[in-house]
Image 1 (cartoon, helix red, strand yellow):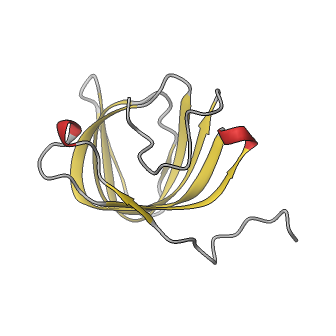
Image 2 (cartoon, rainbow, N blue to C red):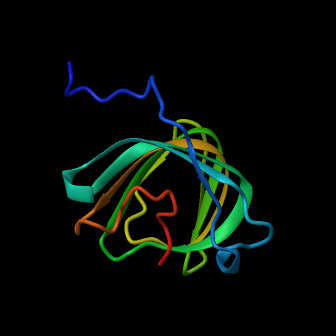
Length: 128
């Protein structure tokens, strides 16, 4: 079954932090396990984990993200100030999101772009 992509054998984690100018408080360390990249750089899926922390974020106009929270809590607050919190079992698709993110815990994620090349092998994917 070579076409079946599983998450049972993870690659080494890529470590990063949000840019200090985007952080609200101390920059948290993030770990990303990119399990699959395809479609000419348009799709990237894997697992993600983060130390507690918060930062401002602005997705590219062509960026779509789907995430499913596995553990911990994720709170997103949009540019208008509306907030929503997600916990284990919750899923979300914040398309073209701009606002603040406060995260602790981990999630499964799939990133998709309408244009190739915006998502690459770098784990620092949400730089504007």
